[in-house]
Length: 591
Image 1 (spheres, rainbow, N blue to C red):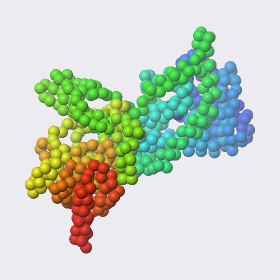
Image 2: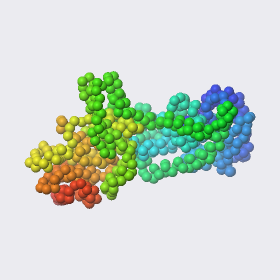
Image 3: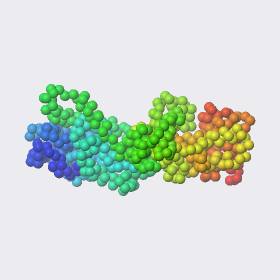
Image 4: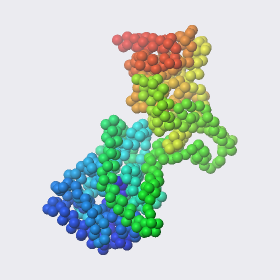
């Protein structure tokens, strides 16, 4: 379902095809209209259109023509038949108006008939009616594309900037995937991976986008489309996701039933010369050619995500060496080293590049596509308390979206320099500093530092930061002390957002930080260290505007059992007792 040339003139439709010259078309028109009226009797004909999506070659004179007629109160409700007119095969579809409009509005027939309006067509009657119906169809399909994008990148979609071409090619690609023979018919309508008459094809999409903007589901910024938060939240409801999923079944069934005969007939007609020359035709090879054509159409290259260095397309496929070339286009680094520095669920590398005697350090994070079996222990470990994002694509999207969100709201996070979604790579600034786990370990080894206000200030500040993050409805998801970095100039940076989410479990953020901090503490004799750290963090959290109810729930067995695997029971008890004591004191002060 794709390329729209509403009201196109005859020369636009037939191109250089000698057989489909103006005189022949005019002769066909009258005969087509006579056939339609002969079959519908006294019923009112709302519209008639001639569909033609075939390449402009002389041999296409033998291509099958498709005609769609919409008729009011037509019985039977749906009729199709083949007629030979002047030596050409013509497939005529006659459809009841009510069924046609239901197919436009909700895909009643899997869009088997409605989708005819999305291919290039010539209106023979009822142009205004067809324009109106086509616009309704385009609006619905655009919204479906946005919903699918939203469900694929639930956090990142808020920040995406989308060009109108995305909708054109996304809808086209879906139709070609449903019925691969479309690839063959569309092959000569492309120059590389772009439609030859893209500007004309986009006109109706822009008209539909304008109407969608009027109801505040999207906004336009320069040449980009951005999706409203309200529409994203609506599209991410399970009911909407499931509805979009099951739509593909009737589309495939009905499109195949109504489309397979004329498509196969075209393949035979258009390959008569080749058939005689080679004395054989391989449908398997044809299908393979079509499938390969799919890979040339990449709608995601028209979807962009922001980084500190500008917009990056979702389709950009850049590896580490390619990034270095992009990063330093005018000067080749004198020396480049790439070292693995850790990672279990992800691969993490440090790039060190020397350019003009200056050292540049960049962190590269590769999000592994981990199998469900490997994730099973982690899921089992947190069962009932936390649901983890598993796919590499989803975790990468969360990392980028949350980093951008926090940066825009004034939090210190490493700058994202570049993103390669196909390679599942994120490139970001390397921050020199020490993660908070070292501060906690020093407090435990050197108890005298408990009185050192400077050592505890960072822990209190982290509590404040978490509260401020929560005030925006964001939860970080992975709040281990290692994911808090104290830079050399004492600035606190938040790291690792691949499990972050909007409107998530705020208590999990608190519980993970406290109980994971307890993991670094010795059970005896310094049990007081756990109490001091807990008290300091909670003081900062409440000071930053965090809600007491989020703190109180952190002592629930729902959370303590998760971390009891690697934190000693005595430490967990010290933390939960401190939470209870602080909660009671705060409540009493309020009373």
